[in-house]
Image (tube, rainbow, N blue to C red; front, side, top):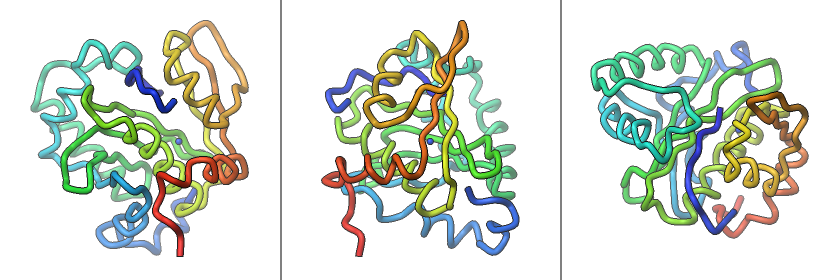
Amino acid sequence: MLPYLFHNPYFERINNKCYASHSKDNNVEKIISNIAKHIRFRLVEVNDAEFILSLRLDPEKNRFISPVKDDIEAQRTWIREYKNKEKNGEEYYFIIESKDSEKLGTIRLYDFRGDSFCWGSWILRHDAPAYAAIESVLCIYEIAFSRLGFMQSHTDVRKGNVAVKNFLVQFGAAITDDDDINYYFRMTRETFEKTRQNYRRFLVEKN
């Protein structure tokens, strides 16, 4: 699920069999590198617990995400459990950083279903630069579609989360269904390739 994030003027397959040939320590870092001009991703580590908790406890940003306790040890335990899923290629949780290693936010790939993925846990600091929002979304789609081989995404957004709903619509995602609580979105690889061209000024040029 995508949380309430920001007010921003710029307004998520590889299967286990395929992924088994990759080494997490070497190849995942390679897969997520050299995408955007101003930011980068790295895999979450236990020592990121305090930063993650500070974002998730922020009352402006946690309206549309799962509640957490103000408990740093519980957050560290959650990350340790997540790292087992990462090792098995089941999901990937990233810290969004500036190119000089300043932490800007978080984002996650998870709920892999055949050729479809979900992305969420997308939270940016209040003072993150404007380009961090669009570049982080470009990165997560680029990783999932172009580098991990997924063909589509499935994402749910709370109906009150107008900023993210509008962002996804503008980005090219289609609303496929809704209920009393959520809108349900789908983005295809084909649509992303078209959208990518509109935002290529934010991306490192492909060789």
